[in-house]
Length: 289
Image 1: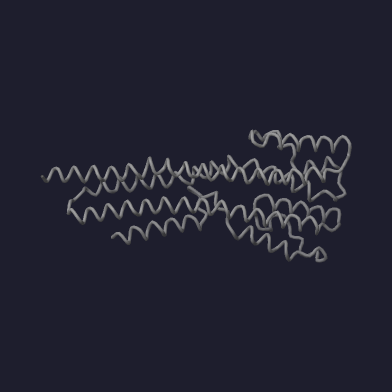
Image 2: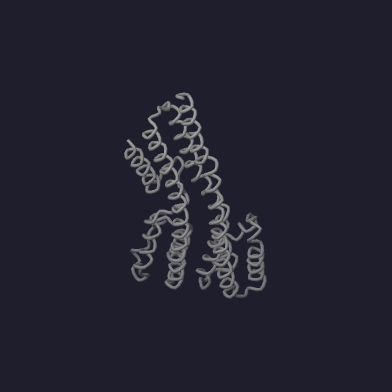
């Protein structure tokens, strides 16, 4: 019976991670195939073969990288030209992003495994104690303990989704702007058109205080480019380095919040379950005496 319960829990967890359910979907774990497929397409793409210019919507969807690639392909169809250097730069950014997502996934998996292990130990103790003292506890009480622990596990993806949006949502928006600006640096478009394609108007919606200085610098760069028509290359390169630093710092905050979340969930859902069983067990033992 114990083996069946543990196996069922493991199968459910693996299925939830590897699938894309519409209910309680794990938005933190980025599917590997789209990012890898897009990177492989960028490696094989040849500007001399116009048949490889896929129509919009046919490329693997991975964050904003697919949108930037489609912008470059759309400009190539409309205006001609070779943007191989831009795609190469974009592929390098994609590789770094996939490595960063791997770190986030590993941190989250560590939390899942720790909580799963605590649940495993709890039920191993419960069944071991029941077999040792030969006391019968009503099945409904054990079901309530199990449901309470599952409720704690179900809170984890919701909390992780919130933390991911809080720490990396605005960073993703700025990355998209910077990558578009960098990729379109040598494209024969007016500065206003480039800034429009980059979506710099979205800067007004970024309210995260830790990114305030970087957002202001990007606004100043865009304003200076529009007024003076100067190159923004050096400013964008600097901002990308600064954003990479901010991303690492936010990841450290994300890890700390995961640790706090784990302690809170263990305190609210797993420790009380253990204590509840001890209370029930002692109550039945006292009744037998």
